[in-house]
Length: 242
Length: 242
Image 1 (cartoon, rainbow over the protein chains, first blue to last red):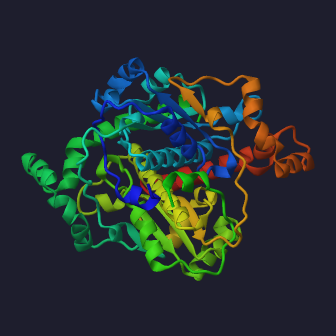
Image 2: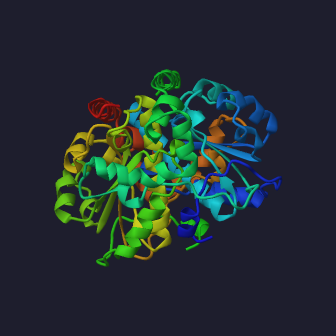
Image 3: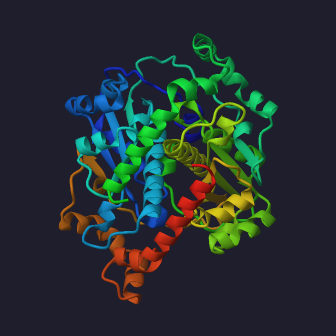
């Protein structure tokens, strides 16, 4: 499919049909993933291909047993990788290396997503990869200087009528020349469509919150959880030598 | 253009023709950028559009005066943005929020790149955005909880014969089920094509290095520079409240 149409048609797919992903389709996705921009031409990333259900089951608890972590025929995990570049040559520096490698891994990940969607597959990123990092490092046997960054289950969609996810209007995300701060009314206008989406109205009402942001901060992603997983991530970075 | 072909045809473009970017082309690029996957549906990013040459000149020193920082008709800067989500609502947590926002910003950035290239534009990421962060924060007037993450000049290519950049073979970046560590011969085989590219052979020879990695680590990206800019980045994260 045309690139622009593919991206404008993006929606999160969490349920997949039984149709397996053909090898030539997977090869196209991986080739596109590996041909993106990369910091200084260094290609500081690796891709782990998971197709073995036993491996998915092993990692499922670290994904909080979300069904999508085991019901997809394919999971691609993108790692920031400063290991391959270093072996038998020269080990790189510290933190900017991490930032670069994260960038390379995410460029590759998004290329893979656009490629997959252009070929009719559906997908949904799993943020849990940034939570229980030690479990993923162990399961995927990642050496020093390799960190998991993005985890994307993919497959042919089970349903063909999954709606688009409500999003902010494009204009609310764009700033001309400099950052223009938002007034209260800018914010209200920006979030109007998302706040009024049926499932969001219900969720906010059911939990007696003032708005969608409260639902996020007070229920879905609590400060104490953030701080806990923040520390896990930092500890994992240290352990992996970043 | 077809999404897969667009990505397989990617190459770095650093010189642009005089042809301006039409508004409807820019709008398509921004719409694609804003419709990617996003952590928890939060859209934790902002895009700064730079078309004013005076703004480009102002930021050029922080990009080490690379010609591309001023010769492109358009620069898109992608920022991790936890500010918009927080205003008048609830401020989010600390570091994982940064990791999420970086992910959202980079998904948007790569979508913009694929969109632009599918419409005939060329581009090249500027890693310098992760170096002189305070200067960019000041020039772009970024408030607390906003950090620049990716900076991409774009335009119609000046030349139509820019070669593809030599890359590692796809297989060298892929691991089945678990990370399979590289033997010395795996590494040599992986880097063979890049090491033998004419400009790399010349560069390594001119500088009396053993291999390409030495050129990177001992000349292009020195450890002391990495450590310096690493500290600048960390200080900027603290200053921006992450």
